[in-house]
Amino acid sequence: DPALVHHYFEDKAQLFAEAVRSPVRPDQIVREVMRGPRDAVGVNLVTAALTAMESGRAQDRIIGLIRTALGHDFAATMLRQFLVREVIGRIAGELGVDDGDMRATAVASQIVGLFVVRYGVKADPLASASIEEVAQRIGPVIQWHLTGYPGSLDTKTISAE
Image (cartoon, rainbow, N blue to C red):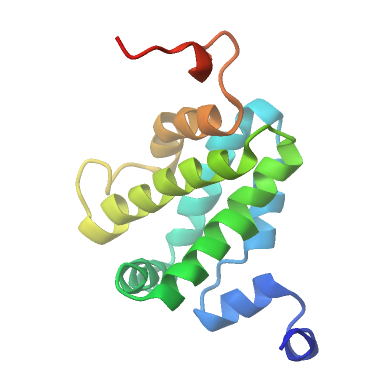
C-alpha cells in the first residue's frame, strides 16, 4: 500500500535500501553521478557504483540479490526497479536522451555484469584493479550507452554486412 510506504519510509529509495538492508541509496548515487559534467557521467556512475560496492556488506547483499533475481520473479522485479527505474533511468531522464529506457537497460546490463565479474566471480585482474582504473576503462562504454560519443557511428547507419 503506497500510504504505508510513505508512512514508514521517506521514499521508494529508502524502502529498497531497507528491503535489501543495503547501504546503497539510489538517490544518493544519482546525485553523485550527476555532479560532474555531462561527458563524465559514465566514469562517475562506475566510480559511484564500485565505491558503494566496496563495503563487504553491500557486496554480499547486492550479489545475493543478483543470484536470487536469476531464479525468482520478485527479486528480479526489485533489482530491475532499483537499477533501471531508480538509478539509471533517473540519470537518463536528467540527461534528456532519446530512447532512455533502452539506454538505461543497456547500462544496467553493463553494471550487473561488472558486479558479477568483479564481486561474484572475482575474476582478476578486474577484481583486483583499482576503482579508478575500472572506471576509466568501463566508464566510456557506459557513457556511450547513455549519450553516444560525438562523431561516433549512429546505430541507424550501421548495416549488417
